[in-house]
Image 1: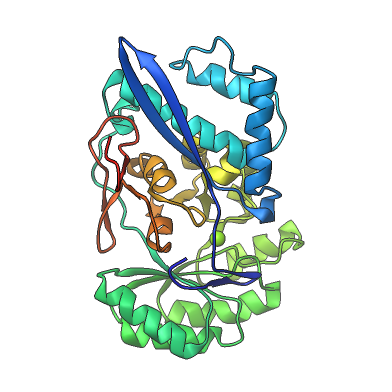
Image 2: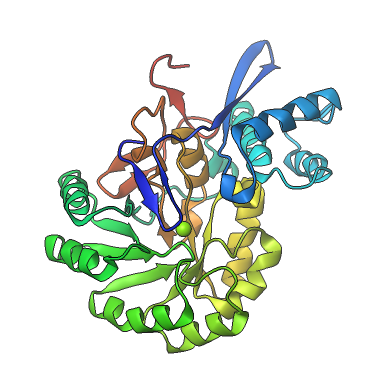
Length: 339
Ligand SMILES: [Mg+2]
């Protein structure tokens, strides 16, 4: 991580992800496709469980005879195995990259999406002491980020938000409590967040909170609320539509791009807004997920900006404005060894 990254339940200085490479001989040309699994210990995965899952797929010849263009068949075969959502996503992303490279078109074109307009991405300010937050906000503003997502759940939440608002009077500010508050805490802070012009609160309530708490916060709170830890796959969407105004998707939760795309359409039907998010990950993950950005309301695609050593180049940033690369597949290349 460029800076130690604090959220309500942890501080992270290093993130380990797993790069997936597929090589495929197509009409005499060797195509290399890239994916990335981003395991989250919060969801019971580590890089070791990801590697063990891939070993198991090889041992059991789970992908034997698979037509790489047949993405639904890939999903069905992976669905034979429970859990391991980050591992499945890493592989599924690489197959999406491969399909685009075989078809010689960007993934968004394969999906028949227009690459513009895209929502701006937020840049995340983790939990830290006031001086560190001041320093990080200054750097973020110097880098041109005018949408900031602030992690809450520390002792000085309001003081920190007032500081950031004073430094960035015109910026769009959103907050993420990472399931840190009780209903009373959330209700009492909601009015103050409204006064500070906060766009939405992500994951306001503790995970054990009953549905009735979310329903009260949704109707009585002054600021819209977004699901993160409560929303994993398609089956969660209808319930989240009762409890939240919006959902945050991450491929570590959905198990891949196809499920995320289905969730976006389902969310629309249920009147939910949608954000694309992520964990600490490289441009492989961020760029792959960003191909869904034409379909969503909000982007939180800064994960590759928060790490110190991104080995890849993909999604382009101009401050908070994002542009999809027009190369085939997910459009990611190595910074050190372009191919
Ligand atoms: Mg979150």
